[in-house]
Amino acid sequence: MNISLKSVLFASALAFASPALAAGTAPNGMPLADDQTFTYRVLDEHSSVDPQIVEDVSGSEIVRDLFEGLYNQDADGNLVPGVALSHTVSDDKLTYTFTLRDNAVWSDGKPVTAGDFEYAWKRLADPETASPYQWFISVMGLKNGEAVMGGEAPVDDLGVKAIDDNTLEVTLASPLSYFPLTTTHASTFPSPKWVIDEFGADWTKPENIVSNGAYVLTEHVPQERSVRERNPMYWDNDGTIIEKVTALVINDENVALTRYLAGELDRTEVPAGQYPSLKAEYPDQALSFPRLCNYYFNFNLSDSGPEATKDVRVRKALSYAVNRDIIVDNVLQGGQFPAYTFTPAATANFEVPTVDYATWTQEERDAKAKELMAEAGYGPDNPLSLTYLYNTSEGHKKIAIAVSQMWKQTLGVEVTLENQEWKTFLETRGNHDFEVARGAWCGDYNEASTFLDLVQTSSGYNDAAYSNAEVDQLLAEAKSMDDPQPNYTRVEEILAEDMPVIPIYHYAGVYMMSPSISGSWPVQNVEQNWYSKDLYKVVTE
Image 1: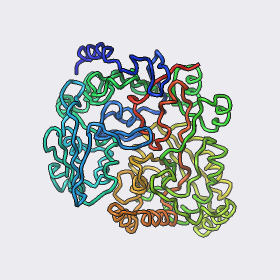
Image 2: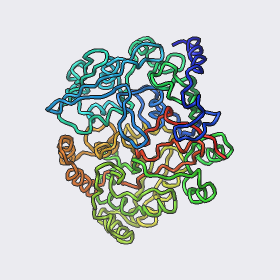
Image 3: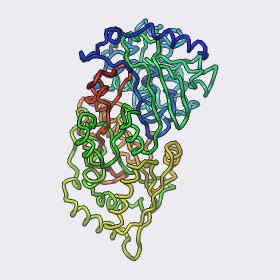
């Protein structure tokens, strides 16, 4: 789409005002505000807005506005129709047939077809795409997925096929009860082949991009801002209220808070340690609620990793010496939860297993940590030195400093802290060029495997390079089990024994949110898959 045509489309968008907006009443019955824009802060520049390339939370938020997959989520996290109206499942639970709506079109006016999904999924699996999320094909369990990703079979063998423009047939390698949940993930969204063929890697620039979501990309200034505006071609444009969404890159969370309080932002994260005072001063603006995310430290267990942390006694000692209560109660203070397992309690149908060290007092953990470190040969005469890598953020820095002090005081470990800008950090960590590194994961779907698959040997985000044959087998078996909890419990027990990662805490969403928009924010959705098309601003006192 060229610039002049895009300008015409946005001029015409004013003629497509939603009934709710025209009536001046929000879905909750309150009067709508005149200003229907949403501006929010992000920590770093997003990785991409290409559905098959994006790999971070902030980028996925943008992609969910620009593109629409088979299904969306409602405010509670339940599946609702997107491009797909419904699906059927074969008796053997291997074939899913999706019926697509006939009124979905791309922003250039072309119809959205089942072929656009087939192309996108094959593009994701194709080794030539080099997608950092290629491994999601395995998560989805598509037939021949492993062979295609490994270059051992042509992409046309992948288990996805457009039967006709409005019928998509998906074939799985084995039954996977949560398969439909994976279709809300950005990597499964359709892509416009004709645009990619024409512009290559530049197809996502504002002047070139064609998308099928409720918004189109109108501006992108790297490391500064990204702007998306209403797409008048979207099938539910009449039901969309927010006109314009701006993501501002603000690296300093305290600067972001200042700009929020000055009225420049509608949402920002609460800086570590400031939630109690902000909640007291702004009770209707400071929010905290559980999120489907974990925060952890990776050990580098690859050949390039340090010998010291290949000793399980050292890894356990370092984990035991972290006082998680101090992290959540004194450093963060935003309603986060101490973590002793990898999978958060907020995960649907998951019962957090009891692992031994979680039942000990911190004094007992510290004592055991000292004992294990001494057994491994480290002490005052032979102190352990480590480098800890994290992406630049004041909050991450505070956690790094706190944990390094715990390790120093309890175990005598000397820690060098190193921070990097987000994209550089992702590359460094992915290349296993670190000793210990920050990790965090927000669930791609609400089932325990979205976390535990990260410690599967071949996972694309197994940054620890951890490999355990029993874990791999348990996770493979779990995919077709009616009740996988026993397998998940055993995997968590193994992780507590092997300690390839150190669980630190499980997330809460801790925001300052404008009262005018908070009523439409999906606080009940622990995945926090929010869609600007579902938001609105109301008049406040």
